[in-house]
Amino acid sequence: MSDKVAVVTGAARGIGLATTHLLLQDGWRVAMVDRDAEILHQEAESCNSLLAIDCDVSKPDQVSRMAAQVLAEFGRIDALVNNAGVADFGPMQDTSFERWRRVMDTNLDGVFLCSQQCIPALVETQGCIVNIASISGFRASTLRVAYGTSKAAVMHLTQQQAAELGEFNVRANCVAPGPVRTKLAMAVHSPEIISAYHDAIPLNRYGSEQEIANLIVFLCSDKASYINGQVIAADGGFESTGIGLPALRD
Picture 1 (tube, rainbow, N blue to C red):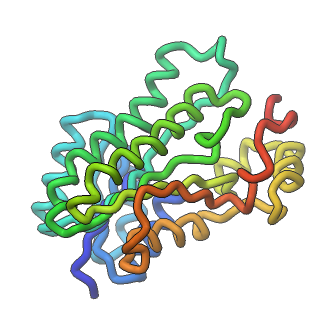
Picture 2 (cartoon, rainbow, N blue to C red):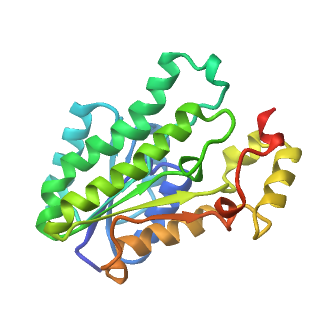
């Protein structure tokens, strides 16, 4: 059993939950952070070496309490996985400022706030930050004015973190997932959209939550000790072929 501690936000489902399970398998102690308290505690019940914390990462006071609770329980933080995020897709002219701010509050402000609170502990352990963006941050696509912009900002924030924290031997990297076969995606993607994605992705399929988690955990590990300031797409080659498919506009 390792003494290393990871904080994973948005950990109650999807990529965050898959990352939590994989870190636990590798011997990490994990603080699961999510604002969906009911689902969070349901998922946490069956796991050892785990701390479940209800927290909205867009709220500075809650983030401050979260970081203090992790340190009180585990005494250290070796990795921060900023995975919490929201999606809001729609035409630019129909995106109200309230919708815009809702996306930015979680997807961008949450990354900034959690990182800021965890930096002192990460400096002590010479740890790392892994931010989760999206291929929608690489280039524009339809219906993603808020979401895509927030993820592009997360990519740049990652580079800012790497530039500033590198002198303390704290690494910061970013994972940009492509289409992932989550329950939510399969519920809202029409057969036409699924077919269009398969046609556009060189590997001809969606990725899995486990595949994204594998990259995240690798970047948290000592095997990635000289990887810093990078944005890595885990997308089956989708970014290389372009986005903005007509089927996705409907």
